[in-house]
Image (cartoon, rainbow, N blue to C red):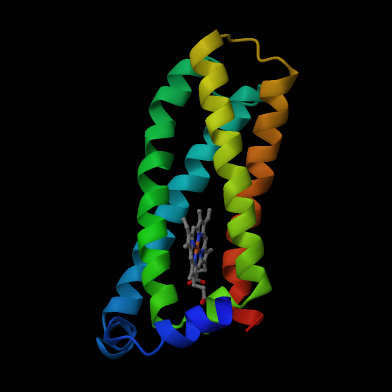
Length: 157
Ligand code: HEM
């Protein structure tokens, strides 16, 4: 099924446009990588605060209120720029096991972030219990795993 999706996608005028208009791929890569910085910095700030490392003078819900909007803004932008890169070279990404792993990790990272958001909003507790701590550890592993997979896609084509 993925194979036929790629075969169809690469013959569309949209795919030809992405490949032939010189600035589209570099511009998408630049936006993707700037958003990556925003996501990783925000996730790191929230997760380390949950784990009691640094920023102790700022409340947990204050940290979450400050950094979560960055994540919820940057991830959709990454989805759009990532989709543009996929449209340009569908086989390189969609059939690539490293890309597929990245997408699986993305689902896990989004679930962990939603979990953190809901616990922090509900409890507004400044003494995080084990579920919140476990989510913070998971979130760190998932977001950084996604970044590693993103870079490794190029080597697994
Ligand atoms: C939201 C959905 C996302 C999609 C659809 C997507 C898709 C892509 C695609 C197609 C590439 C190009 C891979 C290649 O052909 O070499 C890429 C690169 C990359 N992505 Fe994503 N991505 C997404 C989210 C993320 C997130 C959340 C992160 C990090 C937290 C991330 C990190 C990276 C990195 C580090 C690269 C390599 C950039 C480079 O070396 O130029 N991506 N992504």
